[in-house]
Image (cartoon, rainbow, N blue to C red; front, side):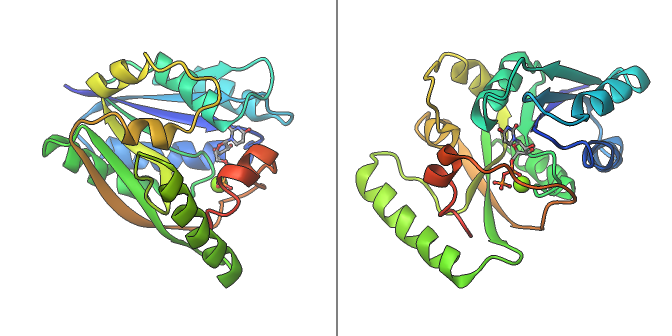
Length: 219
Ligand code: UDP
Ligand code: MG
């Protein structure tokens, strides 16, 4: 049976871990795959690691990696991609803004021959017109400057075939924008649009890095 790795970077998500686990299990248990669920605790200051450890005790498919400090979302994702050994790897957020119900559709496109299935957020519920406008301007400028096209609304909710993951591991840039790197890698890439709900619980982390890359990314 093919194995799927689900890689989830988490920072201060103690209120979301259990719900995320429940929802992803419900979805994966209805599919014909083995799976592993890898949480990367990115130096959380709350009890995230305790909740992950409790799941590890209960379910051998769950694996927790605890980073020594907060390295940021992209570094935590990289750590998970270095660890995952599934035939396909799905990266997604732990706050349920990347709906687990979409996972079967990603798997379907993979089975249909896609090496990368990139999701595109259509809208985030509750986003202001100003953020939508600045987002549009941001992508216009980014695409003028970049040789690699970067799609508006692209997110780090994606499926990658194992051979893409192996190739990706050779990229060792420190300041990384994974969406851009994957986009530049070639392979057979498809997209899937979705509407992001509000986070299930907790707050998004504010950071300057995020301000630059994502704060304008309001759609
Ligand atoms: N995250 C992380 N390290 C950080 C900040 C966030 O691993 O330094 C995780 C977070 O727990 C979530 C995902 O990355 O699972 C996306 O973060 P967030 O929800 O804050 O981003 P947004 O939805 O606002 O883009
Ligand atoms: Mg979020």
